[in-house]
Image (tube, rainbow, N blue to C red):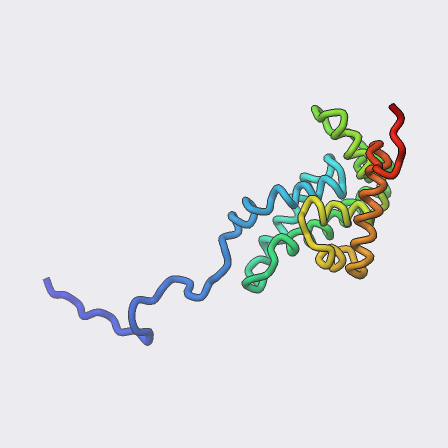
Length: 182
Protein backbone atom coordinates (compact mmCIF):
# COMPACT_ATOMS: atom_id res chain seq x y z
CA UNK A 1 0.00 0.00 0.00
CA UNK A 2 0.94 3.50 -0.60
CA UNK A 3 1.14 5.80 2.46
CA UNK A 4 -0.07 9.36 2.33
CA UNK A 5 2.20 12.06 3.65
CA UNK A 6 1.04 13.67 6.91
CA UNK A 7 -1.15 16.71 6.48
CA UNK A 8 0.48 20.00 7.24
CA UNK A 9 -1.30 22.36 9.55
CA UNK A 10 -0.73 25.93 10.58
CA UNK A 11 -0.08 24.79 14.15
CA UNK A 12 3.18 23.14 15.10
CA UNK A 13 3.08 19.96 17.17
CA UNK A 14 0.05 18.09 18.39
CA UNK A 15 -2.88 20.41 18.85
CA UNK A 16 -4.48 19.89 22.27
CA UNK A 17 -8.21 19.76 22.50
CA UNK A 18 -9.78 22.89 23.99
CA UNK A 19 -6.52 24.54 24.87
CA UNK A 20 -6.74 27.26 27.47
CA UNK A 21 -9.95 25.97 29.06
CA UNK A 22 -9.61 26.40 32.81
CA UNK A 23 -13.17 25.74 33.99
CA UNK A 24 -14.16 22.53 35.66
CA UNK A 25 -16.99 20.52 34.09
CA UNK A 26 -20.43 21.78 35.10
CA UNK A 27 -21.27 18.36 36.55
CA UNK A 28 -18.57 18.94 39.18
CA UNK A 29 -19.96 22.40 39.92
CA UNK A 30 -23.32 20.81 40.74
CA UNK A 31 -21.65 18.05 42.75
CA UNK A 32 -19.54 20.49 44.80
CA UNK A 33 -22.09 23.24 45.38
CA UNK A 34 -25.48 21.55 45.04
CA UNK A 35 -25.97 20.90 48.75
CA UNK A 36 -25.08 24.48 49.69
CA UNK A 37 -27.50 25.89 47.13
CA UNK A 38 -30.25 23.56 48.38
CA UNK A 39 -29.65 24.62 52.01
CA UNK A 40 -29.90 28.26 50.98
CA UNK A 41 -33.09 27.62 48.98
CA UNK A 42 -34.61 25.76 51.94
CA UNK A 43 -33.71 28.52 54.36
CA UNK A 44 -35.12 31.26 52.15
CA UNK A 45 -38.19 29.45 50.78
CA UNK A 46 -38.95 26.46 52.96
CA UNK A 47 -39.17 22.84 51.86
CA UNK A 48 -42.08 23.10 49.46
CA UNK A 49 -40.42 25.39 46.94
CA UNK A 50 -36.74 24.71 47.61
CA UNK A 51 -36.40 21.86 45.10
CA UNK A 52 -37.94 23.93 42.30
CA UNK A 53 -35.70 26.90 43.07
CA UNK A 54 -32.66 24.59 43.21
CA UNK A 55 -33.49 23.16 39.77
CA UNK A 56 -34.14 26.60 38.30
CA UNK A 57 -30.85 27.83 39.78
CA UNK A 58 -28.78 25.13 38.12
CA UNK A 59 -30.62 25.40 34.79
CA UNK A 60 -29.89 29.12 34.70
CA UNK A 61 -26.31 28.51 35.83
CA UNK A 62 -25.80 25.91 33.10
CA UNK A 63 -26.85 28.43 30.47
CA UNK A 64 -24.59 31.15 31.86
CA UNK A 65 -21.59 28.97 32.80
CA UNK A 66 -19.74 29.24 29.46
CA UNK A 67 -19.60 33.04 29.83
CA UNK A 68 -18.52 33.01 33.48
CA UNK A 69 -14.97 34.34 33.82
CA UNK A 70 -12.36 31.78 34.84
CA UNK A 71 -11.50 32.09 38.50
CA UNK A 72 -14.92 33.48 39.50
CA UNK A 73 -16.24 32.55 42.94
CA UNK A 74 -18.61 29.76 41.90
CA UNK A 75 -20.35 29.48 45.25
CA UNK A 76 -21.15 33.20 45.47
CA UNK A 77 -22.27 33.18 41.83
CA UNK A 78 -24.60 30.22 42.43
CA UNK A 79 -26.02 31.70 45.63
CA UNK A 80 -26.72 34.93 43.74
CA UNK A 81 -28.64 32.98 41.12
CA UNK A 82 -30.47 31.03 43.85
CA UNK A 83 -31.38 34.32 45.55
CA UNK A 84 -32.94 35.63 42.34
CA UNK A 85 -34.79 32.37 41.71
CA UNK A 86 -36.09 32.44 45.30
CA UNK A 87 -37.43 35.95 44.73
CA UNK A 88 -39.16 34.69 41.58
CA UNK A 89 -40.75 31.81 43.53
CA UNK A 90 -42.00 34.15 46.27
CA UNK A 91 -43.44 36.56 43.69
CA UNK A 92 -45.23 33.72 41.92
CA UNK A 93 -46.57 32.41 45.25
CA UNK A 94 -47.91 35.68 46.62
CA UNK A 95 -51.24 36.04 44.88
CA UNK A 96 -52.43 32.45 45.18
CA UNK A 97 -50.97 31.00 48.39
CA UNK A 98 -51.39 31.79 52.07
CA UNK A 99 -48.52 33.70 53.63
CA UNK A 100 -47.54 30.75 55.83
CA UNK A 101 -46.83 28.58 52.79
CA UNK A 102 -45.02 31.30 50.82
CA UNK A 103 -42.86 32.00 53.88
CA UNK A 104 -42.07 28.31 54.26
CA UNK A 105 -43.79 27.84 57.61
CA UNK A 106 -45.08 24.42 56.64
CA UNK A 107 -43.17 21.78 58.55
CA UNK A 108 -40.97 19.27 56.75
CA UNK A 109 -41.91 15.63 57.22
CA UNK A 110 -39.84 13.24 59.37
CA UNK A 111 -37.74 15.94 60.99
CA UNK A 112 -36.74 16.28 64.61
CA UNK A 113 -38.94 18.61 66.68
CA UNK A 114 -36.00 20.93 67.35
CA UNK A 115 -35.29 21.15 63.59
CA UNK A 116 -38.92 22.01 62.95
CA UNK A 117 -38.70 24.79 65.51
CA UNK A 118 -35.57 26.13 63.83
CA UNK A 119 -37.12 26.09 60.35
CA UNK A 120 -40.26 27.80 61.64
CA UNK A 121 -38.22 30.45 63.48
CA UNK A 122 -36.06 31.01 60.40
CA UNK A 123 -39.15 31.44 58.24
CA UNK A 124 -40.49 34.10 60.64
CA UNK A 125 -37.40 36.30 60.33
CA UNK A 126 -37.59 39.47 58.26
CA UNK A 127 -36.61 38.67 54.64
CA UNK A 128 -33.24 40.46 54.79
CA UNK A 129 -32.34 38.76 58.08
CA UNK A 130 -33.40 35.33 56.78
CA UNK A 131 -31.39 35.80 53.59
CA UNK A 132 -28.35 37.16 55.41
CA UNK A 133 -28.37 34.26 57.90
CA UNK A 134 -28.84 31.70 55.13
CA UNK A 135 -26.16 33.11 52.85
CA UNK A 136 -23.61 33.68 55.60
CA UNK A 137 -24.10 30.63 57.81
CA UNK A 138 -25.48 28.04 55.39
CA UNK A 139 -23.63 29.04 52.22
CA UNK A 140 -20.53 30.25 54.04
CA UNK A 141 -20.34 33.57 52.21
CA UNK A 142 -18.51 36.55 53.64
CA UNK A 143 -20.60 39.54 54.76
CA UNK A 144 -19.29 41.48 51.75
CA UNK A 145 -20.65 38.82 49.40
CA UNK A 146 -23.96 38.71 51.29
CA UNK A 147 -24.24 42.48 50.86
CA UNK A 148 -23.66 42.18 47.11
CA UNK A 149 -26.44 39.59 46.83
CA UNK A 150 -29.15 41.16 49.00
CA UNK A 151 -28.14 44.77 48.39
CA UNK A 152 -26.71 47.18 50.91
CA UNK A 153 -23.41 47.54 52.68
CA UNK A 154 -21.18 45.00 54.36
CA UNK A 155 -22.04 46.55 57.73
CA UNK A 156 -25.78 46.22 57.01
CA UNK A 157 -25.31 42.55 56.07
CA UNK A 158 -23.34 41.95 59.29
CA UNK A 159 -26.09 43.68 61.31
CA UNK A 160 -28.84 41.66 59.58
CA UNK A 161 -26.95 38.45 60.40
CA UNK A 162 -26.46 39.43 64.03
CA UNK A 163 -30.09 40.52 64.43
CA UNK A 164 -31.31 37.35 62.70
CA UNK A 165 -29.23 35.08 64.92
CA UNK A 166 -30.36 36.97 68.02
CA UNK A 167 -34.00 36.57 66.96
CA UNK A 168 -33.45 32.84 66.35
CA UNK A 169 -31.88 32.44 69.78
CA UNK A 170 -34.81 34.23 71.42
CA UNK A 171 -37.34 32.16 69.46
CA UNK A 172 -35.61 28.91 70.41
CA UNK A 173 -34.99 29.87 74.03
CA UNK A 174 -31.23 29.96 73.61
CA UNK A 175 -30.62 33.69 74.10
CA UNK A 176 -27.55 34.02 76.36
CA UNK A 177 -28.75 37.46 77.48
CA UNK A 178 -32.03 35.99 78.66
CA UNK A 179 -32.21 34.42 82.09
CA UNK A 180 -33.18 30.76 81.90
CA UNK A 181 -35.62 29.45 84.52
CA UNK A 182 -34.56 26.17 86.26
